[in-house]
Length: 385
Image 1 (cartoon, rainbow, N blue to C red):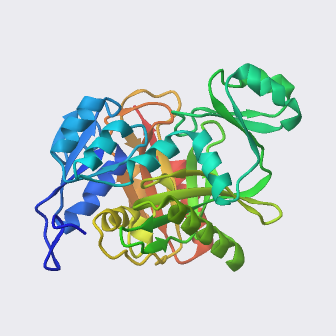
Image 2: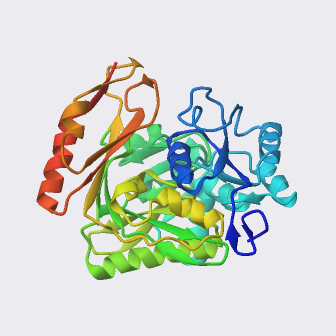
């Protein structure tokens, strides 16, 4: 690495890491960075974003060229916690000698689900068949392709921008904008593998996790680690994640979401070039958390060990339907009084239906007990107003 981070092989901290995005992922990255005595700056459009009280904070649009340039000029290394950022500014900052990880070209590719899919196909990464569509009328030309999933090319996030088109009756739900029509996958499990790569090309994968999605909002409701997979399928999933980050030549952390079909085939669904909801449990459950691993990767440090210390689960803490206002946590004391349960609240003062307000990690050597505790947390801890 350059002189900013290491001088005569001695690690020192007289540099600043800029984070584009001040949400919970940035918050947990800063919390991890405190252990290494690292300095951060944060840019986010929301003056009350979860990171706002943890580091020097600039309120501004992540997609505005001048705002990102001004912010980046005061940083030595720049990273992201959300993909919807101005990549033109990041490219200019990289030309000026700033370290930008993940690289701007990779963020740009992943910002559009259409270019993501083309990348998988060109690199020989397994994924479901698809058509690129320009508008709703274009989707209607592919009636023989149904059932399918229609995704907005850009700016879909946390389940938004996704429609299942099961039959011709559902074609009216298709987006009237550039999108991606994917063959519906009859999957047995949805899994995720977090993989990291540093500047030196060292790669480490985390064991696959098994995800369960909220039936209405299409976002992760809870997960179990390790995923209940055969050794061969788990190994193949990790190899696919390794190939993806290698093909990208990416520095940083990549979440690779995959389907496991009923015939045992593994298909990539989507990738995210940052810490991910499917890696929150690593704070308590793995030898190195995904947040520390991201810092190790972008600083050119040796990557940490990733093995699971104990079987674990993660439950997303979502705002309850019907409640908007100052957040209150019903059942909090009962949950934190349960052995092996760790609650993380994201510092969001206002709750809304299905807003991510925190998560709960549960660790337990007994899988049956672990599942019982997951159900207990889901029944007991509620975010109301």
